[in-house]
Length: 469
Image (tube, rainbow, N blue to C red; front, side):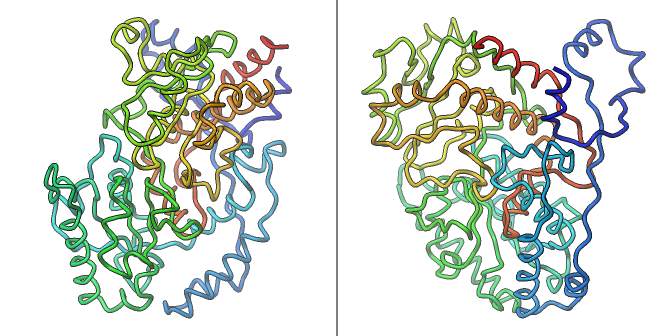
């Protein structure tokens, strides 16, 4: 068992100390027993940054110009394309390689981003639409990005001449709450407001027009995000959009725009409450689970084919009260092998991230959906994608997945879940910042200490394998 743990270790071995070691003597016996149920967290500093080429070092010091920006991008791209190989087995990376499409390129791009990227935030705009993030609800991703980016000192610059990217700090959620009239089905007032704001920025700041808005970005998690940018041609066609509603049919341009994870935050002080805790595979009685309201075209089709049709497939509309009394929604997720994540009117839903939180392999049913941070993450390693037309064959598709592959996917879900637990939502602005810089990110922040992966994750994985040996 010990050798197996070493082969999958995420971080380089280093001296470590206990968190909260100074208060150990004050802990109650109950807290001590609780700590003994999990590994003590280890603090591990990330490896030092690799040096960049001398030519790139000189380029970084040059004054800003459009020519400078293009040359810097090309030189950075060459650095990334020739990234040194890293792997978990050699402990040269503190990232879990199976989660990434190319962990070597990702790590190098992240290092370069931390050394180079500077963001200018426009101070114009009044609250609550601007500079006033909402941190709860299913649109909280945009709020947390705004809060953390505006408080950041590593990437943010007050000098627009030193900036590589320019942030339009509005909240699509707050815009809707302020200007949308209930039951009107009219988004035009929102579109006009945003158009006028961009025109004001363009007239007030000459540097905005140097690239016609192509180095500007916005972060939007509301379903309306793609529609309210259509009133301004440059905003629609040139601006980088980090959006939860990443639909290829709605002017989302893969490779330029960024698909943002949508997650429901219910408690600002405890955003990760109930995370983890999925039970062993041999004790999961449910093959696939879904419960939710009937929005859009996909969910009614799912219920038509599977509600009350098969004991292995627990497919509901809203979770019935009689069912919820015996097993809550969260417990259903933790007790299922697969969690069905169908689209609603739009392709995005927080259910995908919820499935990962509760250690259930997500099954995504949403044609034309660009999965979150898909430029970097290897979604096939920890999820299943099913075409809408294949809903009648859903059980057949899931049963055809070999047990060995399923266990690997579940292991990867647990490792995704572990990264969320120890890195927490306070580091999210770096993830999207790296995406906007040209290579999406789910990585760590340099100045923060890291915690080694708890071995109970690996132990549970080994137990799952033993159960099915």
